[in-house]
Length: 374
Image (tube, rainbow, N blue to C red; front, side):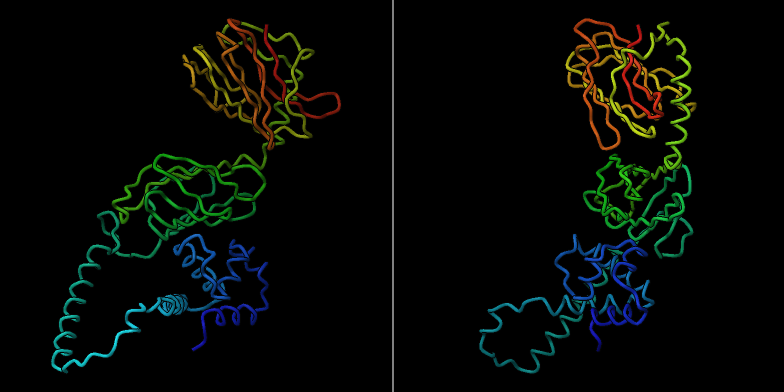
């Protein structure tokens, strides 16, 4: 019988596929493809990933995936070592009748154990008329999708002109999701951003809404949020920044107005504006307000009383207006474009209102600046 590695290699070479082509088409690193063909399984992060990669590779090559899985299991069985004690034991004379009785007992115990194992580990879906146990596949084009996922379920993320497959790989103490950027592991209520196209920005947010590690067959409630505006942010933010630069912002809630950009503190400079995060931490007590600028769907002022060791992250496309009752206890960092820049807001006991926003200079470059509003 042809070995697992030879079967994969022969199928790939007969189609004239290179490792790079296969890796690009099914989003599996070439080192894993080579390892499967060499039957070297120690480099995989876990058996669930290995089985998933083997199944996807086999389907791509048009092979019988069940046969491939059987060949893999046969290899694993052959790799199990035989205990040295068994090799050293001298043969013992056993009567045929005793052997028959032992075999009958083993068969009965095996049947009983198999029935118990199947009952405990049989796949379960929520109660309802569902009759199919095949893994489901969903598609997300825009907005968000929240539902209960089970091991093997897949979601296809349509972003730009590409489609990116994600798979619910494993549920244990945490949820493991296979993504084009590598496996993502989430604890309960944790969220993570995924860079789908390797451009340094997270286009997809995944949130582990609910799961029970003791009830793995009940699946996990997951939420996928796709930021479909990201490919067009540079143009949109640039236009907003140009308007902001040419027209002074309207007075804020407490009535201050800008005094111009002559004393603005530069933070980033780039050919195009891009989204940024304002990281705020507090080393003392402070009343702090913030308001997102020039984003129609995120209007409104936020206000909280913060204590020592509190922190927040504010994400914005165009700008943020902040108000602090004690500027010295507010520590700011602007994060964007792979850079982190600390900012000074003011002195102890000083009430400060400031904008952190994009503006366009006379060279048609965009600058993220901190502008204090008097």
